[in-house]
Amino acid sequence: MIFNPVSRTNEGVIGTAMDEVIRITEENERWSNIVVRENSGVVLNPVNMFPVNRPSTAQDAYIIGEKSIRVHLGRAFRINDVSAFFAFDKYGKLIEIFVHRSLAL
Image 1 (cartoon, rainbow, N blue to C red):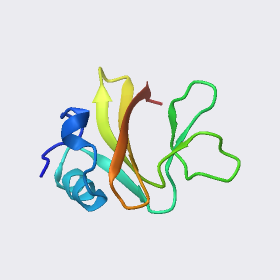
Image 2: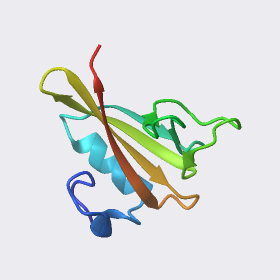
Image 3: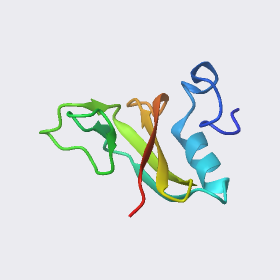
Image 4: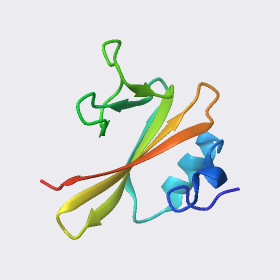
């Protein structure tokens, strides 16, 4: 069992079930805007390889996993939005985590 997939090492988190990650993200009161995509992996922008906040399409060249979760973790220094993107295989096992910081608009 894991307690916080963002603060643990990859070795302690990879392979965690999607249901467990959903439970953990929903229990964290500081995280918001949880988006679960059962039919879309994490889409990466081909120019900078940053995660993109949208479902995958057939035209996307860089898709990690077959399922995904996006969670807004909060704001850093009041100017940056920080989000985590969790990628899962077809069995719902965690295979990769991306943490992305962007300018808050």
